[in-house]
Amino acid sequence: MVLYILVGLLALDAVILIISIILQPRSQGGLGAAFGGSTGAGTFFGGRGGMDFLTKLTAILSVVFVILIMAVNFYIGSPGGGRYNMPAGASAPAPAENTGGK
Figure: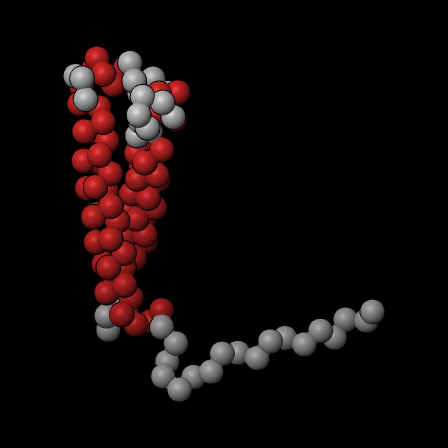
């Protein structure tokens, strides 16, 4: 259950992070301006407030992304999360043979 919550938060963070990267204005042009980033964000956040906001949001979401990746890794590696790991000394199952007639 905890793993599902962590992976769900990780996916949500990744989507918002990608959106914040795409919407950052590139010197008064690019995708940020195409979605109203140069005019709408300028009036809402001030002169350069929109760019500063998206830059800070991207940095914060990047740190949260790394923390969530580490949390998932630690959870899977913990003794309680060990049920997702293959037991020591076990080998992968043999591939099924094709017995169909061709």
